[in-house]
Image 1 (tube, helix red, strand yellow):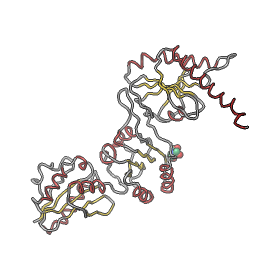
Image 2 (cartoon, helix red, strand yellow; image 1 turned 120 degrees about the horizontal axis):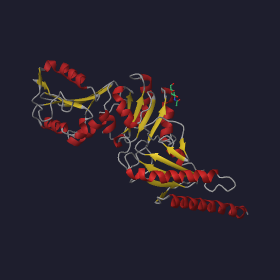
Image 3 (cartoon, protein in one colour; image 1 turned 60 degrees about the vertical axis):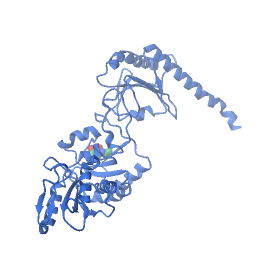
Image 4 (cartoon, helix red, strand yellow; image 1 turned 180 degrees about the horizontal axis):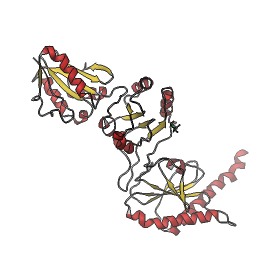
Length: 394
Ligand SMILES: *[C@@H]1O[C@H](CO)[C@@H](O)[C@H](O)[C@H]1NC(C)=O
């Protein structure tokens, strides 16, 4: 007699691990293949991986499966079912669009668990239904979201597969469609178009900062309109560190906003501005629902106005000519800084090796004095090498 147990981990309709094996679907041995096929087909969504074990009922291996059924690290990765049968045991993982894989290792909990975690991710995951916990919120690996309008492209998958295989310990690859049902995920992870590659190194970290502090996230990279022919180049640039980092922003890319000398930075231009060696940048980090930010707002705007005035004044040497006064709302824009609370001021002096310094001052005059001192110190340090130059040439 064979019997196919209900899925150990699955969605609502299936029995829980505790109920197992009460909800058994009894089948005659002759029906077993059909029952397995039906079980696999009906549990493939949404995780695209189903494990089926053949074990004697009440055996040690049966008990091991029950333990695995309670494993929180596996639950979101695949469904597991068991067919009770005396004799030879087996464990096979069926994956959407790829060949099934049979387990050949030892029957120990840790060995099976790590094997399941490995094989539950197919080389390239196809739609139709996306599993956010498996690929994003609880994914211990990186993820490359291949965002394309259609369901999938075999040509693109073929171009991706060798890279997915090479990087499988670091990165998983999945097709993804931008639709009304994935809109929230798109906002959370920064998918902005229907045709892009979005590589997220630590998807478990989630989206934009909540509250008033900000912890920098692992890198993300985003490239639009990548076709099968561009896939090799994409990976080459990614692995050699040539892709620019992508910082999320709740708004689409737009022209820089500058009001009375105050520049609003976004995820789109934060790095470009603070890393620009030709300018010195003072950045105020703010967040939403921040009373202290509101209190400080008028003073900071005054700083921006005065700096603008000093830059544009005629007849005097424009002393703060390369200073940029900027602000970034970190509730709507990702950046690369560790910020413990808002409002926070950090200053990047103009130089090739920009190193930021904290600015503790909070009054208009003390901030302006600080800027003057910084710019004078920079001027001195720039003059010295020039003076020394002839000596070096001797
Ligand atoms: C990608 O294609 C879309 C539609 O053709 C176009 O609007 C967009 O500008 C393209 N993006 C890049 C970076 O070329």
